[in-house]
Image 1 (cartoon, rainbow, N blue to C red):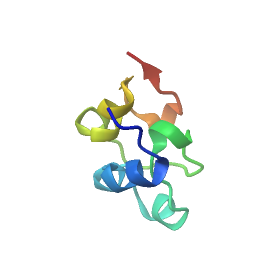
Image 2 (cartoon, rainbow, N blue to C red):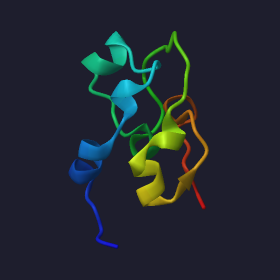
Image 3 (cartoon, one colour):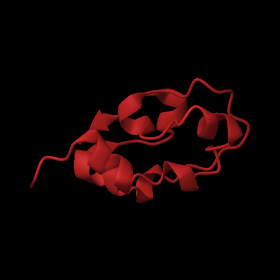
Image 4 (spheres, one colour):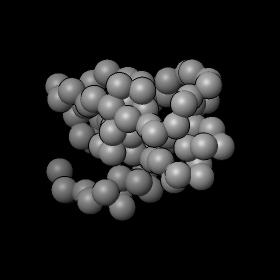
Length: 75
């Protein structure tokens, strides 16, 4: 499998479709929580879509709610 850089992964990221991705996270341009870590925002809505994300599959991560936990475990 070809190694993808963060910009390539960012293009495949679905964080922006997540209910947790709100005005604060948009303003801070927080995407790729699975790689970048926990959100700096106080999240008001929850509804994880990490399990459907191609980035999670490409990187072999498990878990979810990366925006809250900031942790991505490898399979």
